[in-house]
Amino acid sequence: MFTSQPIGFVSSTYKDAREIPKGLGAKHEAEGILRILPEFEPGLTDIEGFSHLIVLWEFDRSQGFELLGTPPSDTRPHGVFATRSPRRPNPIGLTMVELLRRDGCELFVRGVDMLNGTPILDIKPLLSGVAAEKLRRGWLAEAEARRRG
Amino acid sequence: MFTSQPIGFVSSTYKDAREIPKGLGAKHEAEGILRILPEFEPGLTDIEGFSHLIVLWEFDRSQGFELLGTPPSDTRPHGVFATRSPRRPNPIGLTMVELLRRDGCELFVRGVDMLNGTPILDIKPLLSGVAAEKLRRGWLAEAEARRRG
Image 1 (cartoon, each protein chain N blue to C red):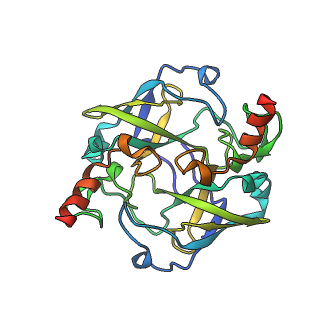
Image 2: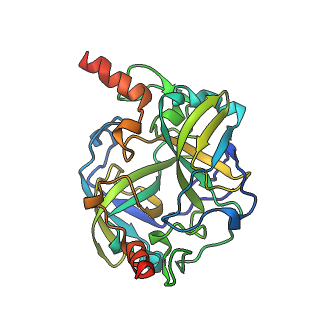
Image 3: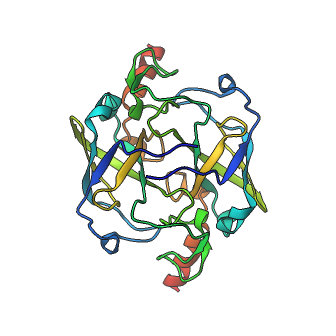
């Protein structure tokens, strides 16, 4: 197994978990910044071509895990793997964000639901699951076009 | 930060990375089993109500990371965070699968692109990004219906 390391930290207006819209159906429209550490900046090359990103991050203010719990969106308990509870065996959170712009090591995004200072573990491009007219797939779309060319 | 722990292991027909359809646009229709360890079984409660799951797993046969690399779907290099390369600072893979059925600790799924024996880190319900007529949202849809009452 591996020991996690931050590739950067989230800058958000949320200082306390109670401020974050809760529940699986909650809408997240808040803007924030993914501040990537300078040593990882080459890893961002070409990311600005993608409209949406998957951000993996650490629930760093959560202790331990609970296999059964009652989420904010229900009054009944459910298994942790059927919820987005922070108290997970591996404390990894996942958020899909819209990439508004990049400035060097900083990614300005919409859809943040992380606390300020949250460690970022990984970023991956989102390739489906958003209406086609809103989704840009960067270098992949270009590579496909060249191949058809 | 945290040290990852497996909550289970993937059972798939892929024994070698070369067998797996590659590239960001590759289609993954292979069936497989997510074998969850018995001590985590309570965490699966109510998961069968969801049609699609996000599986986080470890690239356990990948060594180190490379910030710039040329993916199978292109002839040009891109940043690791703009690709699905296995050589990432935190070696976490992500796959969206369709849940076919559950039998105790075993989740039978379609859409596997992991090697046989891959450690599973987390499972989360998928709540959007799939055509509405194909997406089931389990307890959440029920809780919403009760609230509308």
